[in-house]
Length: 371
Image 1 (cartoon, rainbow, N blue to C red):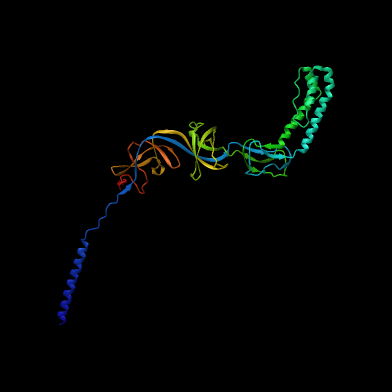
Image 2: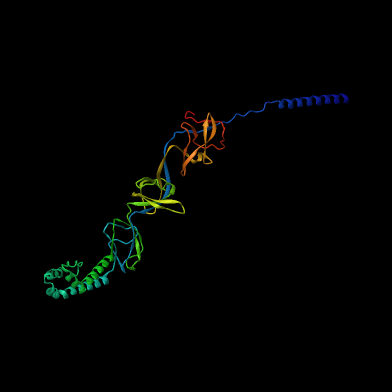
């Protein structure tokens, strides 16, 4: 009986082994999985050569075209005026900006005027005897002289003898001393030379002001200039009167200006030249930062594309029969974002967006509106 059971188990093991082997052989013969080839879709633009303006992007800070720094030429205590002498105060042309106490100086001026008047009176008897024909004009001068008004000009001399006589008596010297003091008296009050705004105030009423001391700054807020640096390569292309588009630093506002001056000197260190742009707008303020686009020249038969599309600064991917090809181009001007190229035939399909991992010979599919 045991022998029969052993024979049955042996046969079962053999059959099982045969069955398992067959399963392994069948699995090994299964076909390998296939993968479909992925073809990337690309965006392209058709090359169209035309005249492209070379726009130079530069920047600078606004400065008022009409700006004066206020300095005192005399000494005295600053007095209050109709408007507070503080930053932000607006003044019309001719309004008093500053008044400095001049009581002591005015008294000295009146004293000099009185001395001058007495000097003229003292020579009247001599004029009557030596220059009887000239007496009346000098008498009229004295009659019209008012010590509280501006000193009138001396009568004209009708002869050298009269001229020498008057000069010898010290009348001319005394007259010009008085006129000098009158001019200086006018410097105790400072008036606005134009309608504008006070941007800086360094003194307050009651302050003792000294000669040569800076008092503040006054500007005309209606018109500004911006100084920009341009590569010396374009120095001969910049011209006065060229239109300029300016933007604020966020490029949310746009202003129109024009080139009014171009410096004739090139900075030896940076090899740049200064250009000055005039711009006017109610939103502009002193010191604002602006970017400027200067049209320097134009390139004919050229194409402008994004700098991101360039490979090693002189190669570009194009599509030919659904295959990428790398061509050599001639870049003529680089801006911050774009580049102007030459040497591309009209109708050439150029990649308009870069493709990661792109290579020459790569198969691609051109995106269409229908898709």
